[in-house]
Image (tube, rainbow, N blue to C red; front, side, top):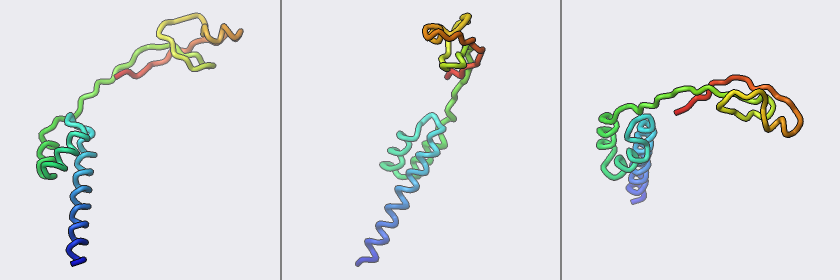
Amino acid sequence: MEGKYLLLLILMLLYIGLVKWFSLLGDRREIGHRRLFWISLLLTPAMGLAFLLSSQERKVHFYTEEGFKCERCSFVFSEKLPACPFCLKEGIRSELKPVRKFMT
């Protein structure tokens, strides 16, 4: 009798492990990992695999924006200023360096 429960426990752990693995694969897809987790858990991992394969890759477009960063306080400004106004309040003149900020 104990062997049946052990086998059932092993099968349940394998089922949940397979569902979790599919959900991790769905993180880079349009369907997302949470939705794929619940589909795989409730409708079997085979249906989860079908949804995973039918889902497209997630499209993320990165673009950059010009900014100006204070070397002392690390604050980034969107417009060119002669010096950092926050550092000027403390009596320190700090030049701003041009940087490229990643935006999504």
